[in-house]
Length: 263
Ligand code: ARG
View 1 (cartoon, rainbow, N blue to C red):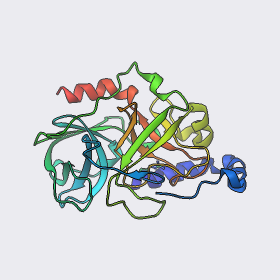
View 2 (view 1 turned 180 degrees about the vertical axis):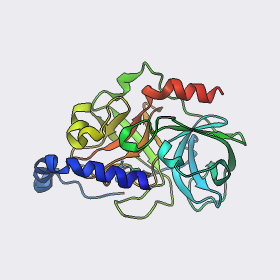
View 3 (view 1 turned 180 degrees about the horizontal axis):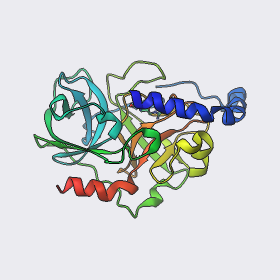
View 4 (view 1 turned 90 degrees about the vertical axis):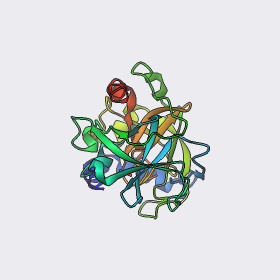
Protein backbone atom coordinates (compact mmCIF):
# COMPACT_ATOMS: atom_id res chain seq x y z
CA UNK A 1 0.00 0.00 0.00
CA UNK A 2 1.12 3.55 -0.58
CA UNK A 3 1.10 4.17 3.16
CA UNK A 4 3.74 1.55 3.60
CA UNK A 5 5.92 3.01 0.88
CA UNK A 6 5.82 6.36 2.62
CA UNK A 7 6.51 4.62 5.91
CA UNK A 8 9.56 2.90 4.47
CA UNK A 9 10.88 6.13 3.05
CA UNK A 10 10.49 7.92 6.37
CA UNK A 11 12.01 5.03 8.26
CA UNK A 12 14.96 4.91 5.91
CA UNK A 13 15.96 8.36 7.06
CA UNK A 14 16.65 6.87 10.45
CA UNK A 15 18.21 3.65 9.27
CA UNK A 16 21.71 5.09 9.23
CA UNK A 17 21.51 6.03 12.88
CA UNK A 18 20.62 2.50 13.89
CA UNK A 19 22.74 0.69 11.32
CA UNK A 20 25.53 -0.02 13.78
CA UNK A 21 23.15 -1.55 16.28
CA UNK A 22 21.42 -3.59 13.59
CA UNK A 23 24.74 -4.86 12.24
CA UNK A 24 25.80 -5.89 15.72
CA UNK A 25 22.61 -7.94 16.01
CA UNK A 26 23.03 -9.47 12.57
CA UNK A 27 26.61 -10.55 13.26
CA UNK A 28 25.89 -12.03 16.69
CA UNK A 29 24.91 -15.62 15.77
CA UNK A 30 22.82 -16.26 18.89
CA UNK A 31 20.79 -13.08 18.25
CA UNK A 32 19.81 -13.95 14.67
CA UNK A 33 16.27 -15.21 14.35
CA UNK A 34 15.57 -17.04 11.10
CA UNK A 35 12.83 -15.33 9.03
CA UNK A 36 9.66 -17.22 9.82
CA UNK A 37 6.07 -17.05 9.04
CA UNK A 38 2.07 -13.36 10.11
CA UNK A 39 5.97 -13.75 10.31
CA UNK A 40 6.97 -16.21 13.06
CA UNK A 41 3.57 -17.39 14.19
CA UNK A 42 1.22 -20.32 13.99
CA UNK A 43 -2.03 -21.04 12.18
CA UNK A 44 -5.31 -20.42 13.96
CA UNK A 45 -9.03 -20.06 13.18
CA UNK A 46 -11.86 -17.56 13.38
CA UNK A 47 -13.49 -20.05 15.76
CA UNK A 48 -10.66 -19.32 18.21
CA UNK A 49 -10.81 -15.57 17.39
CA UNK A 50 -14.45 -14.92 16.30
CA UNK A 51 -13.98 -11.12 16.26
CA UNK A 52 -11.28 -11.40 13.58
CA UNK A 53 -12.68 -9.96 10.33
CA UNK A 54 -11.37 -9.98 6.78
CA UNK A 55 -11.61 -6.60 5.09
CA UNK A 56 -12.05 -7.35 1.40
CA UNK A 57 -12.90 -5.73 -1.90
CA UNK A 58 -16.25 -6.34 -3.59
CA UNK A 59 -14.91 -9.63 -5.01
CA UNK A 60 -14.04 -10.74 -1.46
CA UNK A 61 -10.30 -10.50 -1.93
CA UNK A 62 -8.86 -9.84 1.54
CA UNK A 63 -6.52 -6.85 1.80
CA UNK A 64 -6.63 -5.89 5.49
CA UNK A 65 -7.83 -7.13 8.86
CA UNK A 66 -10.37 -5.69 11.25
CA UNK A 67 -11.78 -6.32 14.72
CA UNK A 68 -15.49 -6.71 15.45
CA UNK A 69 -16.26 -4.58 18.52
CA UNK A 70 -20.06 -4.64 18.24
CA UNK A 71 -22.34 -6.62 15.89
CA UNK A 72 -22.23 -3.79 13.32
CA UNK A 73 -18.91 -2.02 14.05
CA UNK A 74 -15.40 -2.99 12.98
CA UNK A 75 -12.19 -1.25 14.01
CA UNK A 76 -9.48 -1.17 11.36
CA UNK A 77 -6.65 1.08 10.17
CA UNK A 78 -7.28 4.41 8.44
CA UNK A 79 -4.61 3.57 5.86
CA UNK A 80 -6.63 0.50 4.84
CA UNK A 81 -9.48 2.80 3.76
CA UNK A 82 -7.48 5.17 1.56
CA UNK A 83 -9.25 5.32 -1.79
CA UNK A 84 -12.04 3.02 -0.61
CA UNK A 85 -15.77 3.71 -0.84
CA UNK A 86 -18.66 2.10 1.02
CA UNK A 87 -19.68 0.35 -2.20
CA UNK A 88 -16.29 -1.21 -2.74
CA UNK A 89 -15.61 -2.74 0.66
CA UNK A 90 -16.90 -5.92 2.31
CA UNK A 91 -16.32 -7.27 5.79
CA UNK A 92 -16.19 -11.04 6.11
CA UNK A 93 -16.56 -12.81 9.46
CA UNK A 94 -16.23 -16.48 10.34
CA UNK A 95 -13.87 -17.25 7.48
CA UNK A 96 -10.56 -18.79 8.55
CA UNK A 97 -9.20 -19.09 5.00
CA UNK A 98 -8.62 -16.27 2.52
CA UNK A 99 -9.90 -18.51 -0.26
CA UNK A 100 -12.90 -19.67 1.77
CA UNK A 101 -16.48 -18.96 0.77
CA UNK A 102 -18.09 -19.57 4.16
CA UNK A 103 -18.91 -17.18 6.97
CA UNK A 104 -20.88 -13.95 6.86
CA UNK A 105 -20.28 -11.26 4.24
CA UNK A 106 -21.49 -7.75 5.01
CA UNK A 107 -21.63 -4.62 3.01
CA UNK A 108 -20.45 -1.42 4.62
CA UNK A 109 -22.85 1.47 5.13
CA UNK A 110 -20.33 3.84 6.69
CA UNK A 111 -16.58 4.39 6.75
CA UNK A 112 -15.30 6.70 9.49
CA UNK A 113 -11.63 7.57 9.10
CA UNK A 114 -9.94 9.63 11.80
CA UNK A 115 -10.28 13.20 10.46
CA UNK A 116 -6.62 13.93 11.20
CA UNK A 117 -5.26 10.94 9.30
CA UNK A 118 -2.78 11.75 6.55
CA UNK A 119 -0.02 9.13 6.71
CA UNK A 120 0.82 6.19 8.95
CA UNK A 121 3.98 7.90 10.17
CA UNK A 122 1.95 10.90 11.34
CA UNK A 123 -0.34 8.71 13.49
CA UNK A 124 -4.14 8.73 13.79
CA UNK A 125 -4.26 5.43 11.88
CA UNK A 126 -7.73 4.35 12.96
CA UNK A 127 -11.02 3.81 11.17
CA UNK A 128 -14.41 2.37 12.13
CA UNK A 129 -16.67 0.63 9.63
CA UNK A 130 -20.44 0.33 10.05
CA UNK A 131 -21.85 -2.94 8.72
CA UNK A 132 -25.12 -3.32 6.82
CA UNK A 133 -25.49 -6.88 8.12
CA UNK A 134 -24.88 -7.61 11.82
CA UNK A 135 -22.22 -10.25 12.42
CA UNK A 136 -23.32 -13.29 14.47
CA UNK A 137 -19.91 -13.59 16.13
CA UNK A 138 -18.40 -12.75 19.47
CA UNK A 139 -17.02 -9.24 19.76
CA UNK A 140 -13.75 -8.02 21.23
CA UNK A 141 -13.57 -5.51 24.03
CA UNK A 142 -11.18 -2.63 23.50
CA UNK A 143 -9.08 -0.59 25.87
CA UNK A 144 -10.47 2.47 27.61
CA UNK A 145 -8.45 5.67 27.47
CA UNK A 146 -7.22 5.03 31.02
CA UNK A 147 -5.76 1.59 30.34
CA UNK A 148 -2.33 2.76 29.22
CA UNK A 149 -0.59 0.15 31.41
CA UNK A 150 -1.28 -2.43 28.69
CA UNK A 151 1.68 -0.93 26.81
CA UNK A 152 4.24 -1.41 29.61
CA UNK A 153 7.46 -2.51 27.89
CA UNK A 154 7.79 -6.28 27.66
CA UNK A 155 4.09 -7.03 27.91
CA UNK A 156 3.11 -9.99 25.74
CA UNK A 157 0.81 -8.93 22.91
CA UNK A 158 -0.86 -11.03 20.22
CA UNK A 159 -1.21 -10.14 16.55
CA UNK A 160 -3.47 -11.84 14.00
CA UNK A 161 -3.85 -11.75 10.24
CA UNK A 162 -3.73 -13.21 6.75
CA UNK A 163 -0.74 -11.13 5.76
CA UNK A 164 2.50 -12.19 4.17
CA UNK A 165 4.52 -14.78 6.07
CA UNK A 166 7.82 -13.17 5.11
CA UNK A 167 8.90 -9.75 3.90
CA UNK A 168 8.04 -9.65 0.16
CA UNK A 169 6.43 -13.08 0.56
CA UNK A 170 2.89 -14.25 -0.18
CA UNK A 171 -0.22 -13.91 1.95
CA UNK A 172 -1.20 -16.74 4.23
CA UNK A 173 -4.31 -18.63 3.15
CA UNK A 174 -5.07 -19.56 6.76
CA UNK A 175 -5.39 -17.03 9.57
CA UNK A 176 -2.18 -16.79 11.60
CA UNK A 177 -1.27 -15.47 15.02
CA UNK A 178 1.93 -14.66 16.88
CA UNK A 179 2.95 -13.09 20.16
CA UNK A 180 5.39 -10.21 20.44
CA UNK A 181 6.58 -8.17 23.44
CA UNK A 182 5.71 -4.48 23.55
CA UNK A 183 8.67 -2.13 23.17
CA UNK A 184 9.25 1.04 25.19
CA UNK A 185 8.64 4.40 23.52
CA UNK A 186 12.36 5.14 23.91
CA UNK A 187 13.24 1.90 22.15
CA UNK A 188 10.83 2.59 19.34
CA UNK A 189 12.07 6.15 18.96
CA UNK A 190 15.56 4.68 18.68
CA UNK A 191 14.43 2.58 15.73
CA UNK A 192 12.24 5.06 13.89
CA UNK A 193 13.18 8.54 15.10
CA UNK A 194 10.49 11.19 14.65
CA UNK A 195 8.36 8.85 12.48
CA UNK A 196 7.41 7.26 15.80
CA UNK A 197 4.69 9.42 17.38
CA UNK A 198 4.45 8.15 20.94
CA UNK A 199 1.01 9.65 21.59
CA UNK A 200 -0.50 7.72 18.68
CA UNK A 201 1.66 4.61 18.28
CA UNK A 202 3.08 1.67 20.21
CA UNK A 203 5.74 -0.77 19.04
CA UNK A 204 6.00 -4.50 19.56
CA UNK A 205 8.60 -7.02 18.51
CA UNK A 206 11.70 -8.87 19.64
CA UNK A 207 15.04 -7.04 19.51
CA UNK A 208 16.28 -9.87 17.30
CA UNK A 209 13.26 -9.66 14.97
CA UNK A 210 11.85 -12.87 13.55
CA UNK A 211 8.23 -12.39 14.63
CA UNK A 212 6.03 -9.59 13.31
CA UNK A 213 2.94 -8.53 11.48
CA UNK A 214 3.53 -7.96 7.76
CA UNK A 215 1.82 -6.70 4.59
CA UNK A 216 -1.88 -7.56 4.62
CA UNK A 217 -2.08 -7.76 8.40
CA UNK A 218 -2.81 -4.03 8.63
CA UNK A 219 -6.00 -3.05 10.36
CA UNK A 220 -5.97 -6.24 12.41
CA UNK A 221 -5.74 -6.44 16.19
CA UNK A 222 -2.92 -6.16 18.68
CA UNK A 223 -4.41 -7.88 21.72
CA UNK A 224 -3.14 -7.59 25.27
CA UNK A 225 -4.78 -10.00 27.66
CA UNK A 226 -7.39 -10.66 24.97
CA UNK A 227 -8.38 -6.99 24.83
CA UNK A 228 -7.96 -4.89 21.67
CA UNK A 229 -5.10 -2.50 22.48
CA UNK A 230 -3.66 -1.68 19.05
CA UNK A 231 -4.15 -1.80 15.29
CA UNK A 232 -1.49 -3.12 12.90
CA UNK A 233 -0.15 -0.02 11.17
CA UNK A 234 3.40 -0.01 9.77
CA UNK A 235 7.02 -1.03 10.11
CA UNK A 236 10.34 -1.06 8.30
CA UNK A 237 10.01 -4.26 6.31
CA UNK A 238 8.83 -7.13 8.52
CA UNK A 239 10.45 -8.96 11.43
CA UNK A 240 13.77 -7.21 10.90
CA UNK A 241 16.17 -7.02 13.85
CA UNK A 242 15.98 -3.56 15.43
CA UNK A 243 12.71 -2.64 13.68
CA UNK A 244 9.64 -3.60 15.70
CA UNK A 245 6.12 -3.46 14.26
CA UNK A 246 4.24 -0.21 14.84
CA UNK A 247 0.63 -0.28 16.01
CA UNK A 248 -1.99 2.39 16.60
CA UNK A 249 -2.07 3.21 20.33
CA UNK A 250 -5.77 2.61 20.81
CA UNK A 251 -6.03 4.18 24.29
CA UNK A 252 -5.52 7.54 22.58
CA UNK A 253 -8.49 6.93 20.29
CA UNK A 254 -10.85 4.85 22.39
CA UNK A 255 -13.14 7.80 23.11
CA UNK A 256 -13.46 8.53 19.41
CA UNK A 257 -14.02 4.85 18.67
CA UNK A 258 -16.75 4.68 21.30
CA UNK A 259 -18.46 7.69 19.74
CA UNK A 260 -18.49 5.80 16.43
CA UNK A 261 -19.60 2.53 17.99
CA UNK A 262 -22.54 4.36 19.57
CA UNK A 263 -23.42 6.38 16.46
N1 ARG B 1 1.15 -1.51 6.34
C1 ARG B 1 1.02 -2.94 6.37
C2 ARG B 1 -0.33 -3.34 5.80
O1 ARG B 1 -0.95 -2.52 5.15
C3 ARG B 1 1.29 -3.52 7.72
C4 ARG B 1 2.71 -3.45 8.01
C5 ARG B 1 3.07 -3.97 9.33
N2 ARG B 1 4.47 -4.12 9.32
C6 ARG B 1 5.16 -4.59 10.34
N3 ARG B 1 6.43 -4.76 10.17
N4 ARG B 1 4.60 -4.87 11.49
O2 ARG B 1 -0.71 -4.49 5.83
